[in-house]
Length: 112
Picture 1 (cartoon, rainbow, N blue to C red):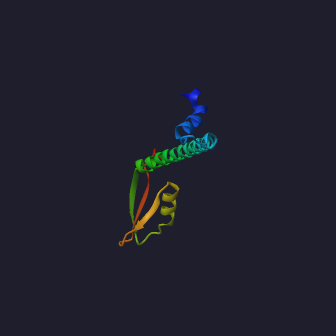
Picture 2: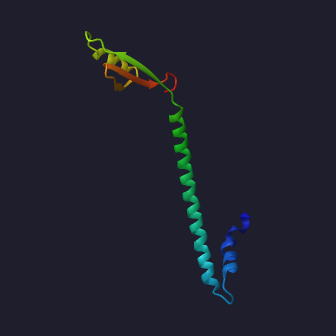
Picture 3: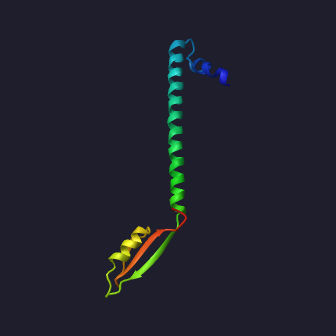
């Protein structure tokens, strides 16, 4: 099929030509159509590649597992140092409860 590829626009023009028809006009139209189709195929391959990359990233995100930590505030202590250490260890504060408890999360170790 590859060695016939250059002939495809001409063959298409022959098939689509009106009886007694304008061969040159149809040949040019077929060449334009073939070029347009090739450009569309290139663009679709690019889109497919982008979608595949996005799918892989999404799979990694969905595969991540989280661990959670709860810390209750002691009214007699200052939490600044404790919270700073948790941040250095990769913990994120995600909520504060009504009872002054703090909930942290981070990705499971070994999955970073």
